Length: 136
Image (cartoon, rainbow, N blue to C red):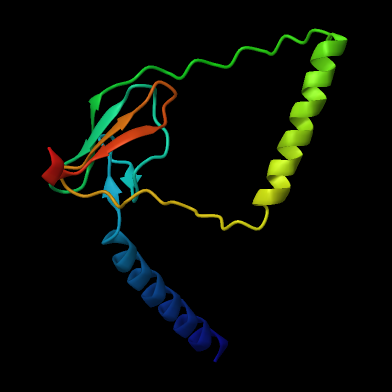
């Protein structure tokens, strides 16, 4: 009896996973390396240009350069004048934060990739421009 119930559970799991895999496969796309891409990458190498082909596979048109690493901050003691300016600036920032705390926050998503779409990344590797096929 336990063996029969275990077989039924296994069959149910296989059916559910198969359905999820078919549903998900329709939404997935691949890049040049066969990697799955479901959305436009938020960040790439600096200066990269990508384009999505007719099958919505991501193609790298221009291979960018690695984003330069940030240099360590050099700390120097502040003069009394600089300390006063810093305190004024911090008060101003705090005032702005207080005024802005009740304002709405908008989260923007990148559009879904589509055939012919081209994405250009800036010098920091962030999206600079998205060019739709009809805009070319």
